Length: 254
Ligand SMILES: Nc1ncnc2c1ncn2[C@@H]1O[C@H](COP(=O)(O)OP(=O)(O)OP(=O)(O)O)[C@@H](O)[C@H]1O
Image (cartoon, rainbow, N blue to C red; front, side, top):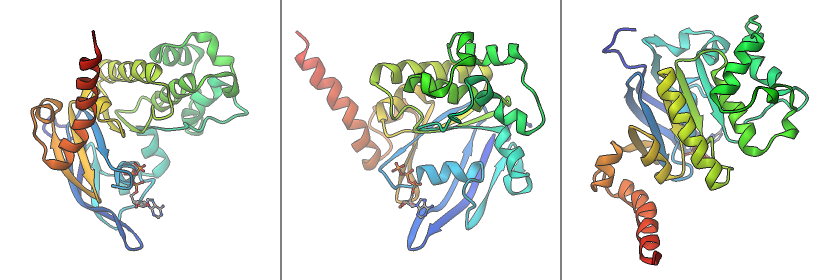
């Protein structure tokens, strides 16, 4: 990949569902190696935008390039192996143990993951190797999400898409897993897009924050710019939530 070429290039992508413009002509470049958070109200088009990248949604118009290649030119299962995808309630196969769940993507491509590769993937999400033989129902919600991340990384993708990956977790697990994923992103040199409802999480983890409203990107700023008051009114409404909470806590602190 040429160094000046974005890892993901989105041009005038639009998607309607009946009367609703889920995405209204979005154009966007995502630099390789960046960690980008996508925030915005429910129904603003965040998930739809993410899914146009791995073709879980086909846009009505516009195009998406992954490392310079139009995603429509790729065979969809191959494309999805090149793009890790983590979503809330990760959807592990209940009748398969952790090892087989992690190995499913490569297996469908005819590649058998070695025990040492499974152990390495478990290490990556900070789980002991013994978890390989556990069944999904024997895991906590946080452990299941970790397995989801390990599974998403099993095919060595360059790009990781995460849709509310930590939404259902308690705040302490959520915080720890967020930091862990950011460290994995840095170590593996990934390009990561993460949808979150939590502006604090976006500000703390991402290099760049996109704010969506009614199918459009209304702010595209760094956390520093947002914390300095930039990004416009909709972004600032979202930034006000964690800021007001931090101020309220500071006032309560003896
Ligand atoms: N498969 C679908 N069929 C019909 N409408 C859809 C479909 N997928 C999404 N939509 C609509 O498109 C709009 C954008 O949905 P999307 O899931 O992208 O929003 P979101 O910002 O991710 O929301 P949330 O934060 O609630 O997950 C919404 O109005 C939604 O109802």
